[in-house]
Length: 196
Image 1 (cartoon, rainbow, N blue to C red):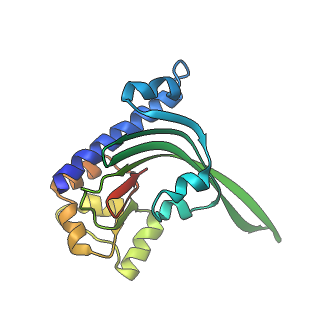
Image 2: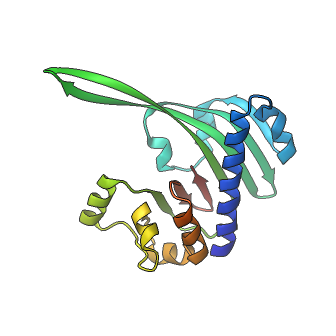
Image 3: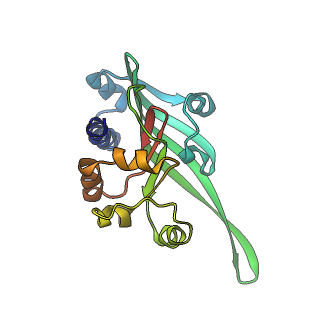
């Protein structure tokens, strides 16, 4: 099953890269390209209605003023594939020269969501590590590391409630691929996952 998931991840990465390329190509729009992939397209959707259909992903807890746009979707049997833009804002408060200030950051991410009840996915969260993650992981020990893949362990913070299941699931092919292609955010919950 983990090898099957590895192929799905590679396919999801390819789909996100194609999606981003079409967004940058001004000569063809996503609405024109979606039928080439046998997918339906919606430029705008109501974010709460759209996200209510998704499980409780941690990604969707970030920031405020969330919006979803440019949704490409395909349903085949029990399998559903969605690629879309997810936007949100984060406000940062800071002190400077005796006064207070606030800055707003706007974030837009291409997200691929795949739902397949046949996937025996453990619940997990994998995100790129940064310096604070490294320090926090050292203190709280929730980061699942793979001694035979030290580069993966330095690049990503991986956590979840069932460590043994996660270790079986993240097989050699998947770990090697993720080492070779750093920077991905991956979250799995109950037979579905999102890749950013």
